Length: 327
Image: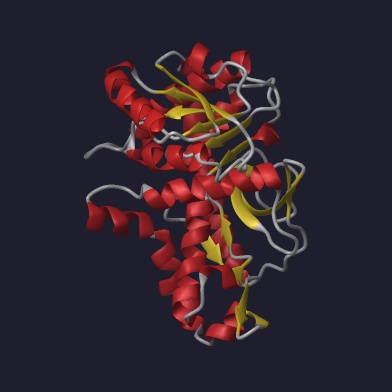
């Protein structure tokens, strides 16, 4: 496994992975930690702490600032880092900086990783970064690349649970459609909730359509910004938990009757989303392979929201692909 590793998310993530929360309690692990050269000293501290956890599954920890070391023979690559947006920076500038990073990481994966590698992109703008990495790694199947929208999925789940006074486990099959941005569409039209032992639709359970079509959607869309405002730092603990959920589901599959959200290549979808976008869909996973959940009816309200986020992703892609040829 490999990812920019001295940051906040990785700090929470590494412990969970190393103690067996993701790949199971009997799977020995080698962690390869990639970061930029100026962070190497900090990374040594992270390695010391991992050693000091005295974890039985952890066979080796390899810190590096070289992509050829980091991506060699990987089974799973979690790409956490990206260029963060700085004040006064246009989204276009952000895309340009990130195209360079993800083109380089994609090419290194193509050259050094196993062809079966599962690549999860977390660094924002995650969907487009993931698409660029995939396009830069032509010998690795497109389906092996996914981006994280599980944090949004978990946020939607927990908002419904809080509203109804149940646990998050009582809520299933929420969907995040589209981009991991404020245009994402959290959809609970197909979600179910267990209330006093009985499974009912979320709309039926909550009986407040204006909240579900208004404040609920806005809260999930803007939750990342709300956390930054309160914490003065972006989501780390919850992001690490979502990455664990995402990777564990790829590895072990989704429970029967449940689906999850992840950003995947849109080719062959039946929901009218343009091809060649990295778009968040509801998926089921079996034998480390995801499939779209098919046949969900889409109402006009949902259609409009799904199209809006597809439009944003199309624009992002066009800008990024322009930079790709010059990167």
